[in-house]
Length: 192
Image (cartoon, rainbow, N blue to C red; front, top):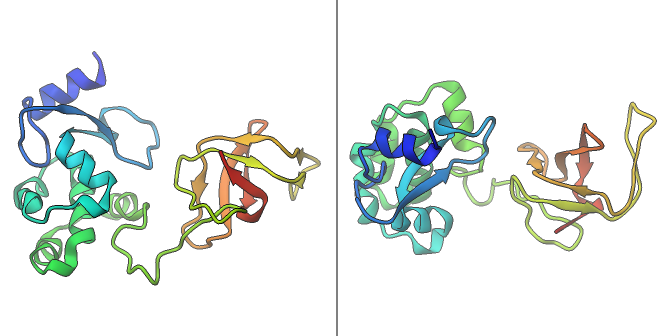
């Protein structure tokens, strides 16, 4: 059974956030570990657009989170927490956040994108040209790099796909080079 069919069945053919019944599609909640139905939600185009484009957020649209934040599916809870965190300065979202409980693993997943942090405290990863890097981006090495603790040398021009960000240090990212997971300093990469 496809993920879309499973999500359609799980959601009752409705957006799991606002309850809309039209223009529904699968939305992967990043960062994903295994993929699949447990890391995805069924959402409408309106919700997805506002999740992906913070400038388009319509506060009144998200009053639906008063109900959907209690959804039993963890991916829905994660998105609800992220959106409430993004809008918390409006007052009512902070009240809902105060009522919401996420276990330690779910909270780590929800905050993995940096949502909920104050802008001045948010760690921003930038490549050698100053372009902002996001979880899941692809980069290319701009210099040969010796890998500490190994005889391996990561060659200039090597593409590193599906990077992970270090949430404690803006200069570090992780990715696989020749099948080996390594830490890379952002000043030696360029976003593809």
